[in-house]
Image (cartoon, rainbow, N blue to C red; front, side):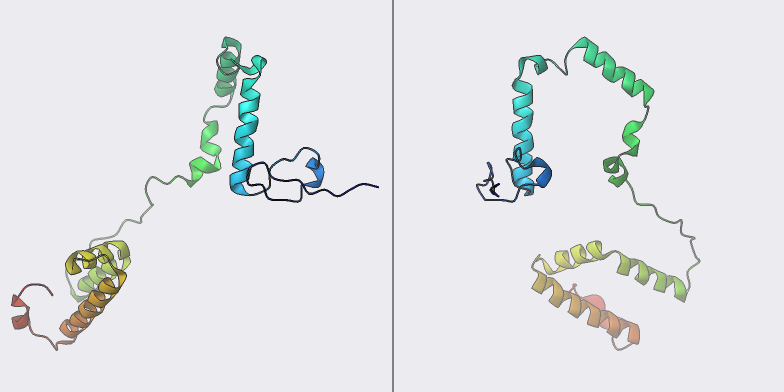
Length: 163
């Protein structure tokens, strides 16, 4: 009769169900931190063996790596890590329109798309980074903008400092 034993993780100490294929060898649970600790322990154990001491420094291994790199130029460009890295977002070229009423609306649309810049500007105007203060200032500026666009506010009242 076989006993179903649940091993104890060497990292966190929790009991876990070992993978069927690694039942006798699995010493760490599947949590991310524990897997990383297990990987580090295995790496230390591998590097501590005398035959592996200079594995990455010996001339024949360096030559082997150079040959492989020569046979596979640009191999690193095909990795998911490289593809995930974006240096600059692709933007479509925008045609410059002559100034008309529609051009002023395009400016408003462009400002709407610049969320982080707008939030930073509002935080700067309100002199606060608290979300409540930013929301209150945003509501006040939105109302002011709507009043200006609808003609309820005249230019005469805008001579003072910003709110």
